Length: 548
Image 1 (cartoon, rainbow, N blue to C red):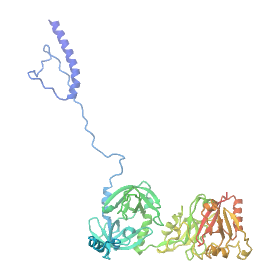
Image 2 (tube, rainbow, N blue to C red):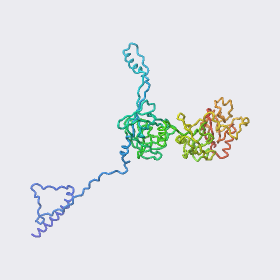
Image 3 (cartoon, one colour):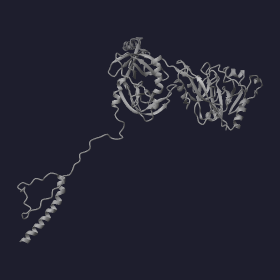
Image 4 (cartoon, rainbow, N blue to C red):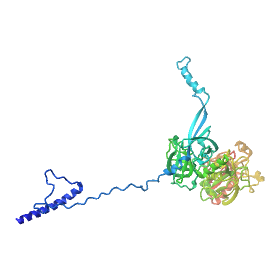
């Protein structure tokens, strides 16, 4: 009997152990005790009692780790600009203008048969519209920003141009009448003045020269009349020329700029104004991420002059220039196309003693490199009037430095440097007459025979031909009487009636002079001939004609 009890006890222990192994994972999953069935003894028999099973070993409760607290996500974009924007919003204003325009009426009145039931209706409508002979008020909105607590406000010229009434609307809703202090159409900038009862919140200019492509910028303005709108973007490009004026040097940004943003500030992340939002490229009229701002490196000096004098006072060099093309660079011995090629000097300008001559290439001006032609007008304009500056030029294949005292460019005059094909005023003769190597008393001995070069037929410019082609008296040289199609001369745009003035900076009086200079250049191994051309009115330009 004892043996039977012991065998039964061993089997019970084995079954209990097996049950414990199976029950452990179930308990871990359920984590809740299973209630005893009705009528079942909730207290199991003692382990020592016959037929009792050993209890299952206790199972440790699983550890549940709570999710980590949310934190900043690395690389998700720039930090919040809320604090920066909050400190600048009060300095950005809306510009509201109104202008009276002549009422043109509703157009021609249709002819209505006398006695028609519609006659009275049409007469009332058209006579009521066109018979007022009055003006209509046209309003527009733009943006601006305060640069001085005393009430000076900067905006675009096109925002207030032609306005009869200008009103500045502040973020708190207050309005002040503004008067125009000064405007500059060449950079599209204007300065207004309001008379506040208390000092205004103002912003300061930063240095746009320090900004790099990819830097973050923030625009604040009044797009579509929604004042105080803040947008964020980067500088997409610098030095953009969009043909808006002679001094184009725009910052391009993808910060959203829309209609109404004109005249508003473009800030860097230090809260400094580094541009004035001016233009957008948009086929739809809304932002597509291509906006342009006048950089403060150009605008700051203009704003200070408008504030102080009510007008701009720009430096003036008094020369006419054209681009240096690859062919022209090769003909002059330049390592690459750079600088501004002088095609003429204005009489009565700052150049009085031949410091700069036609044919010179201006490489640097007052220590600043002239990388391309359009750089020179801007650099000169930013220079003070009456300042003596050093100008590095290339003449006869050699660099030299000359000193020039700048004059003042009058606002009513167009800057001569901006012309692609500049004009030399009538009467300018020092760059067209022969030097010592071509005495005037030998003119009668020159060969009268025509000659051909570069696909053009050349002839002496006598009085009959001068009258026939209406060439002004100040122009001297060799006349072009024919140009062969698809010839080198035709490809460079030379035309019948134009005059060859110089070849390789040597004055020419006869077709034989031209042929001789070309032969010399070929013998020297030159690849191009640097030729000065004049049109019948005296406008000069340079072309590089291939010798190969």
